[in-house]
Image 1 (spheres, one colour):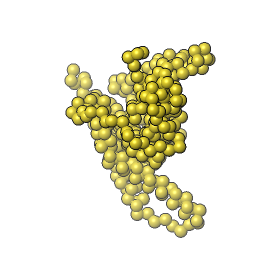
Image 2 (tube, one colour):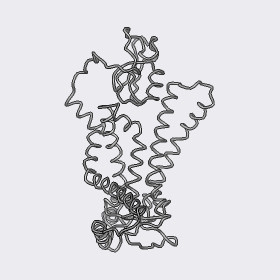
Image 3 (cartoon, one colour):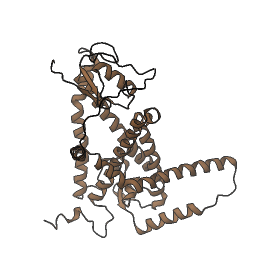
Image 4 (cartoon, helix red, strand yellow):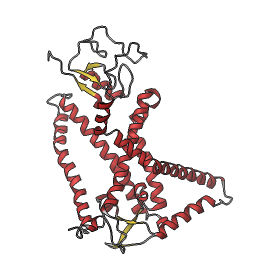
Length: 360
Protein backbone atom coordinates (compact mmCIF):
# COMPACT_ATOMS: atom_id res chain seq x y z
CA UNK A 1 0.00 0.00 0.00
CA UNK A 2 2.89 2.35 0.76
CA UNK A 3 4.24 1.75 -2.75
CA UNK A 4 0.87 2.66 -4.33
CA UNK A 5 0.64 5.87 -2.31
CA UNK A 6 4.24 7.00 -2.78
CA UNK A 7 3.32 9.19 -5.77
CA UNK A 8 1.32 11.50 -3.50
CA UNK A 9 4.42 12.88 -1.77
CA UNK A 10 7.08 12.60 -4.46
CA UNK A 11 7.17 12.86 -8.23
CA UNK A 12 9.35 10.76 -10.54
CA UNK A 13 12.65 12.24 -11.57
CA UNK A 14 11.61 12.59 -15.23
CA UNK A 15 8.51 14.64 -14.35
CA UNK A 16 8.34 18.33 -13.46
CA UNK A 17 4.82 17.93 -12.11
CA UNK A 18 4.64 19.14 -8.46
CA UNK A 19 3.08 16.97 -5.78
CA UNK A 20 -0.36 17.65 -4.37
CA UNK A 21 1.19 18.88 -1.12
CA UNK A 22 3.24 21.52 -2.93
CA UNK A 23 0.30 22.94 -4.85
CA UNK A 24 -2.02 22.91 -1.82
CA UNK A 25 0.67 24.63 0.28
CA UNK A 26 1.07 27.45 -2.22
CA UNK A 27 -2.72 27.84 -2.35
CA UNK A 28 -2.91 28.26 1.42
CA UNK A 29 -0.10 30.82 1.51
CA UNK A 30 -2.14 33.82 0.30
CA UNK A 31 -5.15 32.71 2.34
CA UNK A 32 -2.91 32.97 5.42
CA UNK A 33 -1.61 36.42 4.48
CA UNK A 34 -5.10 37.99 4.23
CA UNK A 35 -6.31 37.38 7.85
CA UNK A 36 -2.92 38.40 9.26
CA UNK A 37 -2.97 41.74 7.41
CA UNK A 38 -6.63 42.16 8.34
CA UNK A 39 -5.76 41.79 12.02
CA UNK A 40 -3.00 44.41 11.66
CA UNK A 41 -5.51 46.82 10.08
CA UNK A 42 -8.00 46.12 12.88
CA UNK A 43 -5.44 46.82 15.60
CA UNK A 44 -4.44 50.10 13.95
CA UNK A 45 -8.08 51.15 13.50
CA UNK A 46 -8.91 50.42 17.14
CA UNK A 47 -5.82 52.27 18.38
CA UNK A 48 -6.60 55.42 16.37
CA UNK A 49 -10.02 55.35 14.62
CA UNK A 50 -9.69 58.84 13.18
CA UNK A 51 -6.38 58.19 11.44
CA UNK A 52 -6.44 54.49 10.61
CA UNK A 53 -10.16 53.75 10.51
CA UNK A 54 -10.16 53.76 6.70
CA UNK A 55 -7.79 50.78 6.72
CA UNK A 56 -10.52 48.67 8.35
CA UNK A 57 -13.43 50.09 6.37
CA UNK A 58 -11.71 49.69 3.00
CA UNK A 59 -9.51 46.70 3.81
CA UNK A 60 -10.85 44.44 1.05
CA UNK A 61 -10.32 47.07 -1.64
CA UNK A 62 -6.84 48.01 -0.39
CA UNK A 63 -5.82 44.37 -0.12
CA UNK A 64 -7.12 43.66 -3.64
CA UNK A 65 -5.09 46.59 -5.01
CA UNK A 66 -1.99 45.31 -3.21
CA UNK A 67 -2.64 41.78 -4.50
CA UNK A 68 -3.14 43.09 -8.05
CA UNK A 69 0.20 44.90 -8.02
CA UNK A 70 2.00 41.91 -6.52
CA UNK A 71 0.55 39.30 -8.88
CA UNK A 72 1.09 41.51 -11.94
CA UNK A 73 4.78 41.87 -11.07
CA UNK A 74 5.33 38.14 -10.59
CA UNK A 75 3.30 37.05 -13.62
CA UNK A 76 5.27 39.46 -15.82
CA UNK A 77 8.73 38.61 -14.50
CA UNK A 78 8.46 35.01 -13.25
CA UNK A 79 5.49 33.46 -15.12
CA UNK A 80 3.94 32.62 -11.75
CA UNK A 81 1.95 34.13 -8.92
CA UNK A 82 3.69 35.23 -5.72
CA UNK A 83 2.88 32.03 -3.81
CA UNK A 84 3.76 29.79 -6.77
CA UNK A 85 7.14 31.46 -7.18
CA UNK A 86 7.70 31.21 -3.42
CA UNK A 87 7.41 27.41 -3.69
CA UNK A 88 9.59 27.19 -6.82
CA UNK A 89 6.80 26.75 -9.37
CA UNK A 90 5.88 28.42 -12.64
CA UNK A 91 2.97 28.45 -15.09
CA UNK A 92 3.08 26.97 -18.55
CA UNK A 93 0.38 27.54 -21.19
CA UNK A 94 -1.42 24.64 -22.81
CA UNK A 95 -1.34 24.62 -26.60
CA UNK A 96 -3.09 22.33 -29.10
CA UNK A 97 -5.19 20.53 -26.51
CA UNK A 98 -2.87 18.84 -24.03
CA UNK A 99 0.50 19.62 -25.56
CA UNK A 100 2.72 22.07 -23.71
CA UNK A 101 4.43 24.99 -25.32
CA UNK A 102 7.65 25.56 -23.45
CA UNK A 103 8.63 29.18 -22.80
CA UNK A 104 11.51 30.77 -20.85
CA UNK A 105 10.40 31.73 -17.36
CA UNK A 106 11.58 35.33 -17.85
CA UNK A 107 9.47 35.75 -21.00
CA UNK A 108 6.26 35.73 -19.00
CA UNK A 109 2.99 34.23 -20.14
CA UNK A 110 1.27 35.01 -23.45
CA UNK A 111 -1.05 38.02 -23.20
CA UNK A 112 -4.22 35.92 -23.22
CA UNK A 113 -3.06 33.57 -20.46
CA UNK A 114 -1.51 36.47 -18.52
CA UNK A 115 -4.71 38.50 -18.21
CA UNK A 116 -6.87 35.45 -17.56
CA UNK A 117 -4.50 34.34 -14.79
CA UNK A 118 -4.41 37.85 -13.28
CA UNK A 119 -8.21 38.17 -13.22
CA UNK A 120 -8.70 34.73 -11.70
CA UNK A 121 -5.98 35.30 -9.09
CA UNK A 122 -7.26 38.70 -7.93
CA UNK A 123 -10.94 39.11 -8.77
CA UNK A 124 -12.26 35.67 -7.79
CA UNK A 125 -11.06 35.87 -4.12
CA UNK A 126 -12.33 39.46 -3.87
CA UNK A 127 -15.78 38.62 -5.23
CA UNK A 128 -16.01 35.49 -3.06
CA UNK A 129 -15.19 37.51 0.08
CA UNK A 130 -17.76 40.16 -0.82
CA UNK A 131 -20.40 37.50 -1.44
CA UNK A 132 -19.73 35.85 1.92
CA UNK A 133 -20.09 39.20 3.71
CA UNK A 134 -23.33 39.89 1.84
CA UNK A 135 -24.75 36.51 2.86
CA UNK A 136 -23.75 37.09 6.49
CA UNK A 137 -25.41 40.52 6.51
CA UNK A 138 -28.61 39.20 4.91
CA UNK A 139 -28.81 36.41 7.47
CA UNK A 140 -28.53 38.90 10.32
CA UNK A 141 -31.26 41.06 8.80
CA UNK A 142 -33.45 38.00 8.34
CA UNK A 143 -32.92 36.87 11.94
CA UNK A 144 -33.95 40.25 13.35
CA UNK A 145 -36.66 40.95 10.70
CA UNK A 146 -35.22 44.25 9.54
CA UNK A 147 -37.43 44.26 6.40
CA UNK A 148 -41.26 44.12 6.41
CA UNK A 149 -42.58 40.54 6.23
CA UNK A 150 -44.48 41.08 2.98
CA UNK A 151 -41.78 42.91 1.03
CA UNK A 152 -40.65 41.49 -2.31
CA UNK A 153 -37.03 42.11 -1.29
CA UNK A 154 -37.39 39.80 1.69
CA UNK A 155 -38.78 37.01 -0.48
CA UNK A 156 -35.91 37.46 -2.91
CA UNK A 157 -33.09 37.36 -0.40
CA UNK A 158 -34.67 34.45 1.47
CA UNK A 159 -34.62 32.50 -1.78
CA UNK A 160 -31.02 33.62 -2.28
CA UNK A 161 -30.04 32.50 1.23
CA UNK A 162 -31.72 29.14 0.65
CA UNK A 163 -29.84 28.58 -2.62
CA UNK A 164 -26.43 29.86 -1.48
CA UNK A 165 -25.38 26.74 0.55
CA UNK A 166 -26.00 24.52 -2.47
CA UNK A 167 -24.07 26.87 -4.77
CA UNK A 168 -21.18 26.98 -2.29
CA UNK A 169 -21.28 23.18 -1.96
CA UNK A 170 -21.07 22.81 -5.75
CA UNK A 171 -18.15 25.27 -5.86
CA UNK A 172 -16.17 23.45 -3.17
CA UNK A 173 -17.04 20.08 -4.70
CA UNK A 174 -15.69 21.26 -8.05
CA UNK A 175 -12.34 22.05 -6.44
CA UNK A 176 -12.29 18.75 -4.53
CA UNK A 177 -13.05 16.73 -7.67
CA UNK A 178 -10.29 18.55 -9.57
CA UNK A 179 -7.79 17.79 -6.81
CA UNK A 180 -8.77 14.12 -6.76
CA UNK A 181 -8.29 13.93 -10.54
CA UNK A 182 -4.87 15.58 -10.11
CA UNK A 183 -3.85 13.06 -7.43
CA UNK A 184 -4.90 10.14 -9.62
CA UNK A 185 -3.07 11.56 -12.63
CA UNK A 186 -6.25 12.23 -14.63
CA UNK A 187 -5.78 16.03 -14.75
CA UNK A 188 -2.86 18.36 -15.32
CA UNK A 189 -4.21 21.08 -13.01
CA UNK A 190 -5.15 20.76 -9.37
CA UNK A 191 -7.48 23.78 -9.46
CA UNK A 192 -10.37 24.68 -11.78
CA UNK A 193 -9.02 28.24 -11.90
CA UNK A 194 -5.84 27.01 -13.57
CA UNK A 195 -7.99 25.05 -16.01
CA UNK A 196 -9.99 28.18 -16.85
CA UNK A 197 -6.75 30.14 -17.34
CA UNK A 198 -5.40 27.46 -19.71
CA UNK A 199 -2.18 26.88 -17.77
CA UNK A 200 -0.58 24.23 -15.56
CA UNK A 201 2.06 24.33 -12.82
CA UNK A 202 5.54 22.85 -13.17
CA UNK A 203 8.70 23.07 -11.11
CA UNK A 204 11.37 25.63 -11.86
CA UNK A 205 14.40 24.09 -13.57
CA UNK A 206 18.05 24.97 -13.10
CA UNK A 207 17.92 26.95 -16.35
CA UNK A 208 14.94 28.92 -15.05
CA UNK A 209 16.74 29.84 -11.83
CA UNK A 210 19.81 30.93 -13.76
CA UNK A 211 17.67 33.01 -16.14
CA UNK A 212 15.96 34.75 -13.21
CA UNK A 213 19.32 35.56 -11.62
CA UNK A 214 20.67 36.95 -14.92
CA UNK A 215 17.56 39.07 -15.43
CA UNK A 216 17.81 40.51 -11.92
CA UNK A 217 21.50 41.25 -12.36
CA UNK A 218 20.95 42.87 -15.77
CA UNK A 219 18.12 45.04 -14.42
CA UNK A 220 20.30 46.32 -11.58
CA UNK A 221 23.26 47.20 -13.81
CA UNK A 222 21.49 48.43 -16.97
CA UNK A 223 21.98 52.07 -17.97
CA UNK A 224 19.19 53.84 -19.81
CA UNK A 225 20.18 55.67 -23.03
CA UNK A 226 19.34 59.32 -23.52
CA UNK A 227 15.75 59.70 -24.70
CA UNK A 228 12.91 62.20 -24.72
CA UNK A 229 11.32 63.55 -21.57
CA UNK A 230 8.13 61.54 -22.22
CA UNK A 231 10.05 58.28 -22.48
CA UNK A 232 12.02 59.13 -19.36
CA UNK A 233 8.82 59.79 -17.39
CA UNK A 234 7.29 56.50 -18.58
CA UNK A 235 10.47 54.65 -17.72
CA UNK A 236 10.63 56.26 -14.28
CA UNK A 237 7.00 55.39 -13.54
CA UNK A 238 7.51 51.81 -14.71
CA UNK A 239 10.65 51.51 -12.65
CA UNK A 240 8.91 52.98 -9.58
CA UNK A 241 5.98 50.56 -9.89
CA UNK A 242 8.36 47.66 -10.40
CA UNK A 243 10.40 48.72 -7.38
CA UNK A 244 7.27 49.04 -5.26
CA UNK A 245 6.06 45.60 -6.31
CA UNK A 246 9.50 44.11 -5.68
CA UNK A 247 9.64 45.73 -2.22
CA UNK A 248 6.20 44.41 -1.36
CA UNK A 249 7.03 40.93 -2.60
CA UNK A 250 10.33 40.88 -0.74
CA UNK A 251 8.66 42.04 2.45
CA UNK A 252 5.99 39.37 2.13
CA UNK A 253 8.59 36.72 1.37
CA UNK A 254 10.49 37.60 4.54
CA UNK A 255 7.40 38.00 6.71
CA UNK A 256 5.30 35.12 5.41
CA UNK A 257 6.25 32.80 8.26
CA UNK A 258 5.64 35.60 10.76
CA UNK A 259 2.19 36.15 9.24
CA UNK A 260 1.40 32.45 9.50
CA UNK A 261 2.48 32.60 13.14
CA UNK A 262 0.09 35.51 13.70
CA UNK A 263 -2.72 33.52 12.12
CA UNK A 264 -2.07 30.66 14.53
CA UNK A 265 -1.64 33.03 17.49
CA UNK A 266 -5.00 34.68 16.93
CA UNK A 267 -6.86 31.48 16.08
CA UNK A 268 -9.87 30.65 18.24
CA UNK A 269 -8.26 27.52 19.72
CA UNK A 270 -5.11 29.35 20.80
CA UNK A 271 -7.05 32.34 22.13
CA UNK A 272 -9.03 30.08 24.44
CA UNK A 273 -5.79 28.79 25.93
CA UNK A 274 -4.43 32.33 26.33
CA UNK A 275 -7.62 33.54 28.02
CA UNK A 276 -7.51 30.66 30.48
CA UNK A 277 -3.94 31.59 31.43
CA UNK A 278 -4.27 35.38 31.46
CA UNK A 279 -7.87 35.81 32.61
CA UNK A 280 -8.45 39.21 34.19
CA UNK A 281 -11.59 40.79 35.67
CA UNK A 282 -13.63 42.99 33.35
CA UNK A 283 -12.47 46.63 33.51
CA UNK A 284 -14.92 49.29 34.77
CA UNK A 285 -16.71 51.51 32.25
CA UNK A 286 -14.93 54.76 31.29
CA UNK A 287 -15.53 57.62 33.69
CA UNK A 288 -14.72 60.44 31.29
CA UNK A 289 -15.40 60.32 27.59
CA UNK A 290 -14.24 62.88 25.06
CA UNK A 291 -17.31 63.70 23.00
CA UNK A 292 -17.29 65.30 19.60
CA UNK A 293 -20.26 66.84 17.80
CA UNK A 294 -21.31 63.49 16.32
CA UNK A 295 -21.02 61.47 19.56
CA UNK A 296 -24.21 61.20 21.66
CA UNK A 297 -24.12 61.97 25.38
CA UNK A 298 -24.89 59.13 27.75
CA UNK A 299 -28.39 59.32 29.30
CA UNK A 300 -28.74 59.36 33.06
CA UNK A 301 -31.20 56.44 33.10
CA UNK A 302 -29.59 53.09 32.31
CA UNK A 303 -32.67 51.87 30.45
CA UNK A 304 -32.51 54.67 27.86
CA UNK A 305 -30.85 54.13 24.47
CA UNK A 306 -28.10 56.75 23.83
CA UNK A 307 -29.17 57.07 20.19
CA UNK A 308 -32.97 57.33 20.12
CA UNK A 309 -33.36 58.60 23.75
CA UNK A 310 -36.18 56.15 24.34
CA UNK A 311 -36.52 53.04 26.49
CA UNK A 312 -34.38 50.35 24.86
CA UNK A 313 -36.10 47.68 22.79
CA UNK A 314 -34.30 44.43 21.93
CA UNK A 315 -31.20 45.31 23.97
CA UNK A 316 -27.96 44.86 22.04
CA UNK A 317 -24.41 45.54 23.21
CA UNK A 318 -21.34 46.35 21.16
CA UNK A 319 -18.52 43.94 22.03
CA UNK A 320 -15.93 46.58 21.10
CA UNK A 321 -17.06 49.08 23.77
CA UNK A 322 -19.68 47.41 25.99
CA UNK A 323 -22.36 50.09 25.56
CA UNK A 324 -25.98 48.96 25.10
CA UNK A 325 -28.47 50.29 22.51
CA UNK A 326 -31.67 49.29 20.76
CA UNK A 327 -30.89 46.75 18.09
CA UNK A 328 -32.33 48.82 15.25
CA UNK A 329 -30.45 51.93 16.41
CA UNK A 330 -27.14 50.12 16.80
CA UNK A 331 -27.57 48.20 13.53
CA UNK A 332 -28.32 51.31 11.46
CA UNK A 333 -25.51 53.36 13.04
CA UNK A 334 -22.82 50.66 12.78
CA UNK A 335 -23.85 49.72 9.25
CA UNK A 336 -23.44 53.32 8.03
CA UNK A 337 -20.41 54.46 10.07
CA UNK A 338 -18.56 51.28 11.18
CA UNK A 339 -17.85 52.64 14.66
CA UNK A 340 -19.27 52.75 18.17
CA UNK A 341 -21.64 55.73 18.61
CA UNK A 342 -20.16 56.63 22.02
CA UNK A 343 -16.46 55.75 21.91
CA UNK A 344 -15.75 55.86 18.18
CA UNK A 345 -14.05 52.45 18.26
CA UNK A 346 -13.99 50.60 14.92
CA UNK A 347 -17.04 48.30 14.94
CA UNK A 348 -18.77 45.99 12.48
CA UNK A 349 -22.16 44.27 12.46
CA UNK A 350 -20.59 41.07 13.75
CA UNK A 351 -19.78 42.89 17.01
CA UNK A 352 -23.48 43.33 17.88
CA UNK A 353 -24.37 41.02 20.80
CA UNK A 354 -27.99 40.31 21.73
CA UNK A 355 -28.70 40.63 25.46
CA UNK A 356 -31.34 38.40 27.09
CA UNK A 357 -32.75 40.11 30.18
CA UNK A 358 -34.47 38.14 32.99
CA UNK A 359 -37.71 40.07 32.46
CA UNK A 360 -37.76 38.93 28.82
